[in-house]
Image (tube, rainbow, N blue to C red):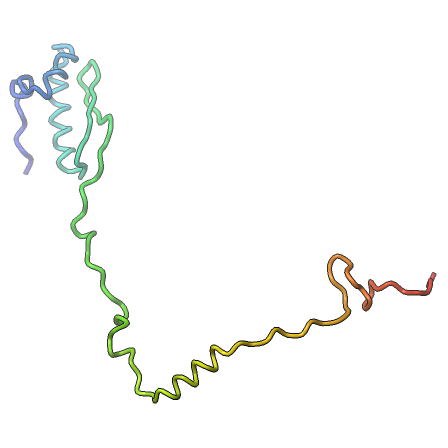
Length: 141
């Protein structure tokens, strides 16, 4: 059901809308009244908190600036955990502690760097002693 239309007399006496009626020619007041009532219906259904409206000299009303949308109450849901917390007993183990320390020592053991390869090419032409780009002592031409 649509809300009742606001009469032109109520709109003209309202201090918020009186400047609009001063701006519009009196012959176009019915158009302004009709446009304002359409605007009120739109504003109730649009979901904006604030709207700044403007009008033409002929009484047509349009939104000049739109404020923020009203927050959707279904958008703010509490965070649902997909995994148990770290202090949950699910993460505990029944393994003996010396197995755990042995596993930690194996994974944290430092690995030595591999030895550097001797010879070979490189970019750009560093120490090329092997391969197709190596310099040959004899002229093959």
